[in-house]
Every structure is written in C-alpha cells, then in structure tokens.
Length: 76
Image 1 (cartoon, rainbow, N blue to C red):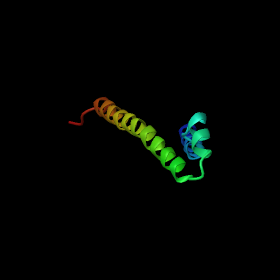
Image 2 (cartoon, rainbow, N blue to C red; image 1 turned 180 degrees about the horizontal axis):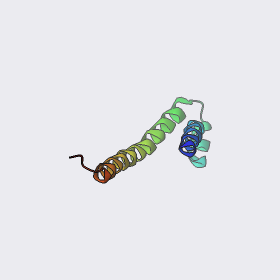
Image 3 (cartoon, rainbow, N blue to C red; image 1 turned 45 degrees about the horizontal axis):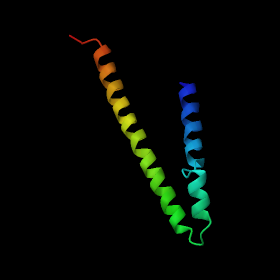
Image 4 (cartoon, rainbow, N blue to C red; image 1 turned 180 degrees about the vertical axis):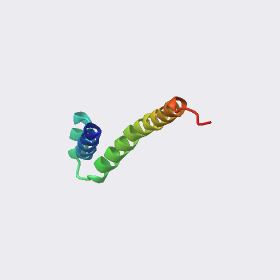
C-alpha cells in the first residue's frame, strides 16, 4: 500500500514538471516575439497527450472492477 502511495505522489509531481514540446518546436516558437503561440501549442500537446491516458485508466478501472466482482463469493 505504501508503495502505491509513493508511486502516485512521485508520478503526480513528475507530471507537473513535464514540458510537452519537443526541442525543435520549442526552438522555433521561442525565437519569435509572441509567446502566446508557444503556450497555445504546448497546451494543445498536453491535452492530446492526456486523452489516451484517461481512456486507459477508465478501461483499467472497468477491468479491475469486473475482475473483483467475479472473485467475491456469493452470499446465500
């Protein structure tokens, strides 16, 4: 249990520090004067990256729930 909590905390703080832009995109976008385009592209990349992780988490939860439901003995 402690291991799961530590993993969750480390993963959460690692996610906060991530920067989604690749080196080439960052170099091109930071060379301009307008930084709003760079921020917009970074937000778009983060949004596109989050959707597959959310879908996998939901599917994993459904599988976990159905697996645990089938393992419980039926009370008579």
